[in-house]
Each structure stands twice: as structure tokens, then as C-alpha cells.
Amino acid sequence: MSDIAAERLERWLGRILGVGAVTSTSLLAAGLVLQLVHVRPDVADTLTHAGLIILIATPVARVVASVVDFVMSRDWIFTALTGLVLVILLGSLLVAIR
Amino acid sequence: MAAGILGALLGLGGGVFLVPFMVLALHLPMRHAVAISLVTVIATSSVVTSIRMGRSLVNFRLGMLLEVATTAGGLAGGVIAIMLSQRTLQRMFGLMAVASAFAMLGRLEKRNVIVASDVDTGRLGGRYHENESGGVVSYRVKRVPVAMAASLAAGSLSSLLGVGGGIIKVPVLNAWCGVPLRAAAATSAFMIGVTATSGVVIYYGRGDVIPWMAAATALGVLAGSRTGFMMGERAKAKWLKLLLAAILAAVGVLMLARTR
Image 1 (cartoon, chains in turn cyan, green):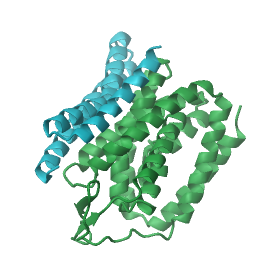
Image 2 (tube, one colour):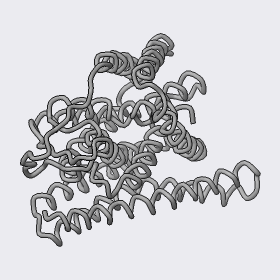
Image 3 (spheres, helix red, strand yellow):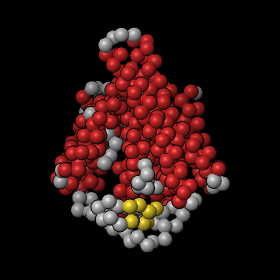
Image 4 (cartoon, one colour):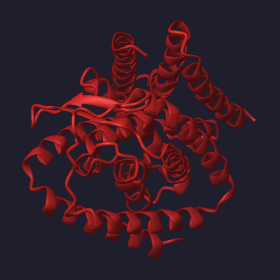
């Protein structure tokens, strides 16, 4: 992989992780505050769950982005490796909903 | 929050202190403690990695290769955790904490090896700019199968016990695989997010993640790790490690002694 391609991937992944972290922690904070002041517990619950799901989905999104990037740069070995990670994550999901 | 401070001082995720705190002080079942801790591991990984981006400390190719092993370990650990009793899991945690304390004592005098800047980095190696020396550090990754095995072990430990697994990966990558300490720690921090995800999905599906507690601890650990990071810049490394190794050993012994 060329240095330019590596840098592009690094920026891209950093942005995904940063946006995911900021969005999820804001939702968690909002949910927690609503919970503490006992206003609309249903809304508080929804916000907290949404925050948790976005938090957990952030690394998954990062893996998906790497797969796409490796396909675009025709790096088939790393396409296979990151694809395999995605399959394993899918395996966890299958265990969870079973 | 205290877990975050301690964790950042040690260069670990907060999990190794968070889990015993929740089990011993809050009397939570091990499964809930592990699940909540894994949520904070993901939060820490995403935040730390996004901040570090652009400095080339994280070795992506190495990280993405080793993630195959850490997530496979994470999935296996999550499945095994369902079958083990609360008591067994707590004992395993105690042993892991005591072993880590000893490992830390063993590394007290070790310094980071300076790597020459003209090495051929190969397919997996890396290169980064070091601020202190002002030079460029290049390294080549050796013994990839050892790194894969350590990652598999780290991944299973992560979802069994709610830690990041850096406690295994970082020393192995540094001592056996030729990766400089800072690059090893940064790459490990990058990997623990997706590793914890492979475990936490299983816990989440089983209803072990208590939402409001996970929210509170994730926010607390993030706030705490910032404080810990600033304290770590000032404190003397050797005394800090000694103190933290002692706390870690004490926590481990308590986890072993107070199994219910």
C-alpha cells in the first residue's frame, strides 16, 4: 500500500471512530441526565440504548470502511482479513440472538 | 472514574480495576460487571484512537491482521463465559490480576529499545516520528505467529473477564515481535474496540448490559482517563508502576478471597 493510500485510510478511520464516539457519548450523557431528573424515563431509556448501540456499532463501521478501502485499492489479502473479522462479528451477533 | 484514572496511568483500559470495583463494592454479578466493562473498553478505544490519528503510531496493517485472532478469541470467550460459573470467572480474574502485577514488577527497569531509522520495514512494519528524540523510528515485525497466538489469548481473556487484553499483547509485541512500546500500545488500543465488540454483542443479547450503569461508567472512565493521562505525564514512572502493581495484586487477592 502506498503511503498516500495509507494516510487516506487512517484519516477515514479516525473520522469514523471520532464521530461514533462523540455521537454515542452525547446520547449516553443526555439519557443519563434525563434519567437523573426523572423527566420522561421512556425517552431517557431510548437515548441510552441508542447511545450504546452506536457505541458498539462504531468499531463495526470502522471494519466495514476498511473492507471497502482495501477493495478499492485492490489489496485482496487485507480485503480477506478484514472481511474475516466482519464474519466473526456476525458470528457473535448470531450467538447473541440465538 | 477512578478506574479510568488508574487505567490511563498504567496504559491499560480501565477494565482491570472497573470489574473488581463493580463486583466487590457494588456486589454486581460478574457477568454484568464484565459486560459493562467491555462497553467502556470500546468507548476508550474509539476515543483514544481517533485522537492519535495522523501520528502514524497505530500500525493499521498489523492491527487488522491481529484483529482476526482477537475477535475470534473474543467470540470464543463470550461463548465460554456463558458456560462458566460466577465463581470460576471471578477466580480467573483474580489470578489474571495477580499475574499482571508480577509481570509489571518484572518490567520495572525496562526501557524502550531505540530502533534504528533505516530498517527495511517489510510488509507489516511501521515508521513513526518520535517527539522526544526528534527522529524517525522504523521497525520490522518479527514472529507473526507468536503475535497471532498472543492476540487470540488476549481476545478470549477480554470477553471472559472484561479487560482490553493489552496486558498480554503489548508486552509480547514489544519483547518478541520487535514493535516499539508506544507503537505496540497504540496498536493494541486500536484493536481492543473491535475485540470487545465481538464479546459485548453476546452479553448485550443476553441482557447483561445494564444501560444506565454502562452509560455512567463509560462517561466516568472517559473523564477519568483524561485526568490520569495528565497525571501520568508528571508522576515518576517507577513509583507509579510500583504503586499500581501493589493495587493490582491486592485487587486480585480480594477477588480470589471473596468468591461467593
